[in-house]
Image 1 (cartoon, rainbow, N blue to C red):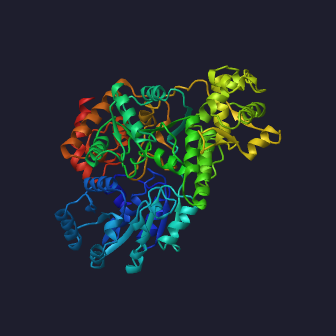
Image 2: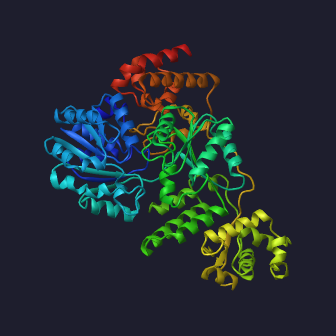
Image 3: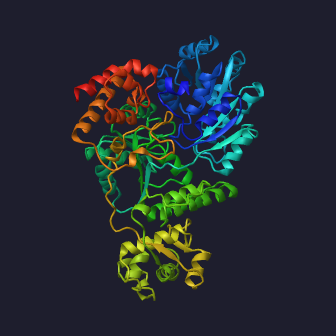
Length: 622
């Protein structure tokens, strides 16, 4: 507890942190599943400072290593990293510091760790513990598979008395079993925290004019905020970034096809800047420790709920209100199914991936609480609707779509199972287009039988039929729809179909001010490096109300002060203080160092370095 307060500036642990830390301090092995922003890092950082010797943290993410080491040094902790970003002289200096016993924590890439040179260095070093971060990388179904992770069992073989702690934010039961098996952690104590991120509002909207929908979302909810926008292709990333800049919003592209120096520069600008939007493929985001990402938007859906959870989890790491927004449409469903069916992977892999895709599509199409669907997927029952997703905030109306489904499926069958939604809807609406007439589809029994529904409604019907598996996509032809066995059962009247009505208009619900609602609750949130969550894990930022003009002026003045200090030291602003700490300054307005030292996130080192600068701003603002 002394280390938590004196070094990291928090007065209480949250969730299972204290239990995990005590177990590792006593020399026990642990497998820890904790959501992004849940305070995983403290679970090994505090034991590293309490136990004698060097703590070795294995991480595949260079950006995360750099950010965490920077933050630790700001807190007065002796930390360093070894990875490919260091030149040979810098790497040798770090190794000499290890040999001299001058470090408490050393972050190392798995490729470096398994080299004979580094293993011999560890053999000569007094070791406190091994922390294996992003442990899901050992799984063949993992998000970012790194083969070197499979060799990490060598640590226990060479140092059987040194405790190990493996950590991940995303792992289903299968992946957990693989982690335990391949890292030799069969006897480790397993700690599974709730996967719930209560501060994130989940929202999926029908894709119409996606760029205008995105722009409206940003202007209404996140006019000043940093965020990430995910797109499927590199070309789309660059197009969307350029378009946002043309609309007056600072945006940067990021994908694997950009020159490495451009990628690194854009990532650095995003991390150190305020209010910058990163438009990226999934190549971006792993290991980004920026806590005040206020939104994650998907213009194309990911391939699985694991990927969705991992990517949306990069929002709101500080525990303050954040948005996960996704635009999703017919073309996305067709594209995802085509990619899966065209895959040359083994049948066992395709079966697993098919199950993952079905779960994602079910999440997108659900009429029930999205958080319930998401958490149930990870094996965590969530008995009550969350009240903080679109289907809870604006309940979705469902209807008996059996007759409509029969019409839609019949149109597929009678046109020869060769056409996509556009042509089929023209047939149902009785639109005698050149193509309809040319194919003689205006003489079919289904021609004009769907005039009871509008074009947008039929698009919704077809999207849901494909998502639910009543239709599949012909990958050998031109992407036309084909009936599945379950689709045939619907036509024969053997299976009822329940459909959801897409919302006619997206509800405008601002979240930008929710960042500041934290203040109206008056009180800080105990926690670890993630900060921002109360002891029971509920976001403090959900209370009603916004800042007064005076408080708003102080908030911006404090941010300006933080930005200036960060630029002087060449570190990201959040390394100085998180937004949650600045909001506590607004709420409590400390007038001296004693009061300042009570703020969450203010440890002894930061009290000495920064108190005077921020106290001066508070006094100037009255």
